[in-house]
Length: 482
Image (tube, rainbow, N blue to C red):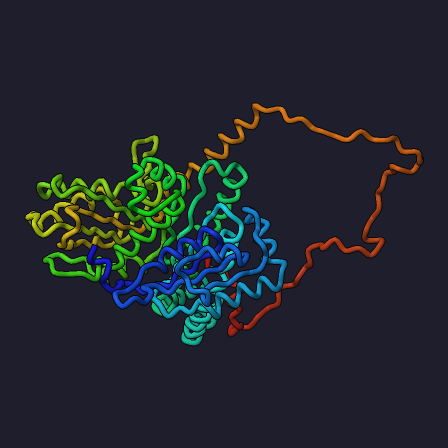
């Protein structure tokens, strides 16, 4: 597609964590500008040198190893290692503060959620990045508000001023995008349990407006695996992918890059331009849902065929299961999840003469279908594209993909139900009877008498502060701000 050679609407830095995340970043690193230079700035961090050697496109100077030798698909253990190992903790911090230089408008953090390194380090990386780049800006705005406000009112309504400080800082904070992949069902119940925990942590971070997170994409390896299995052999060879993981990376890379470059094109009467795309991606926060529908141009006869393609596209995603935007209640009413800005984009062959009114018809249908709170951006491009017609849809919502909202728990429960059918043998080594009389004795000691402190909660008396108290931004809870 010619439009993919356009300059990107949003300049992005891609940071991959762990085996899956670094492979995703490597896919983006394969994209070159017409002059041969990389289109995106891409970096990789993993737990050992060996895994980094498999990367093809990220330069060796942009690869960092924690020298841990792997963390065995156990993110909970990995989190403990990072917390307890000062050298590792400092190396991760330096990677985020020194190597991830936010000169671009968006920093994309990429990881798989089925392993140890990526799952754990992406959480810590988001916190470190925010502490270093965004929190000082928010503190600066909060201090300004304090100085210009009545001291008593500031102290009494601190949450209100915190929310205002976050809004005031929004233009200057560096936006973060998160792309994480859910594991396949066959990874087993322990992986599903841990992934369920870490997705909740990521979603909580995303909803915290002070973190500067523009969106999360919960890409689903199970959907990629199912789709890959259905691909004919000749299509797999044409895509140059050998497994569902490579197929997943290709799908993620293609749709993001295609939309990021298509919106800098033009030449038609209805345009979805780069500024529209920036607003859609960078404003608000939530789950980013992207989809792409392709048809042979012969199957598109009129504006209603394109309208049908848009309506099909808006109901799904080629990166994960559909999101359930409206849930019917027992009384017949519906509870809807907010949908922020929506983007509709078509790419048509120049010899296909279809009135541009198809965009108005499609926009009206989509607006009636979705609970939209923002703006609908729409446009189309005309170019030769192997006799194909393509429509893209993208929107940001506070809803989640079905598998994440309900499916992981259901899969875990199914695993556990199957396990209940088995009776496990408890093997043991036979014991030789003890000959001493004091092998066992009851013990009831007060350890405080021995000078051992078990860490009882300290009672700290609240100090009375004057109206012009110092702002300790690390102690402020920005979660849940309106």
